Amino acid sequence: MSPNYAYLDGEFLPKSEAKVSVYDHGLLYGDGVFEGIRAYNGRAFRLREHIDRLWSSAQAILLTIPMTREEMCEVVLELLRRNKRNDSYVRVVVTRGVGDLGLDPRKCPRASVFVLADAIEMYSRSLYEKGLRVVTVSTRRNSPDALNPAIKSLNYLNNILGKIEANRAEAAEGIMLTRDGLVAEATADNIFIISDGVVRTPPVYLGILPGITRAVAMELVQKRGLEVEETPFTLQEVYPADECFLTGTGAEIVPVVEIDERQIADGRPGTITQALMQDFSRLVQTEGAEIWERKEVSKAPR
Image (cartoon, rainbow, N blue to C red; front, top):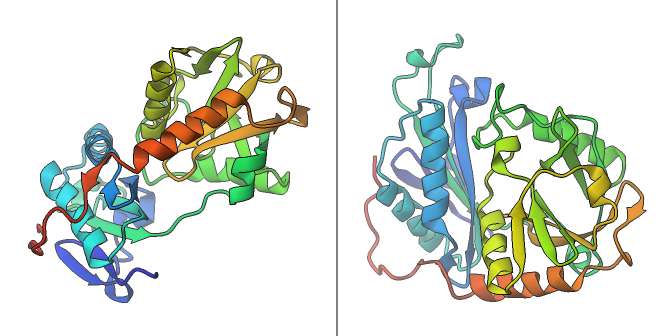
């Protein structure tokens, strides 16, 4: 079912009427932050964690969000109600707002907020069953001392350049390295490897996004009594790994079976990865902020 409404600066509007200015600094300069949130079975999964990360990103770029966190949570839930969506992907965007053609953010008196809810499919269902073929791309992940990837900003050109390389290689995803040659993350997902029963993922300080699904995967690993480590590793440790998988709000948990034409183990999704995928599917069906808990339509915050 196609969504009918979007939220824009205090109003729930028909999506065809939700428009931002061509003078918005989010459009002109990528000056803003965003979050992607999933709703499953009438619940917005880890909603507060996503909103907290949105505020953290905004604080890092000195962007004042013109509402409270509680109001933002309510906007997300109300948009899902209005669009009658139990299962959805939600995109929350905060831009610097309308300014002039100059770079100075002080020329933007008020931030702009818009929220969209729609379906999303990062990978086909068959790839969750068979696993992804990925490649390492030459585009290096942004350095934390330049544009820190931990800030979920609207400037995703670094990721897009990596994705273009993956597309040209006809691969499902591209693995990005740090400037020192360590594995960072995929263009849209975090990465995990499993060797000898130990689950490893790059630490945030290398310059990766602290993914919400990444954190959930680590929780699920620990619940299974397995060891999980946030530690740097190189491609030479990825190639001989027993298993590999990616995580992200859009991707959820998806197995990787080949990297740079090198087969991971037997070339099939690993048993631990498959178990984590099942654990995740069960979790999202029962956890999250209830969409339909409030019956009356609330006024949108301005």
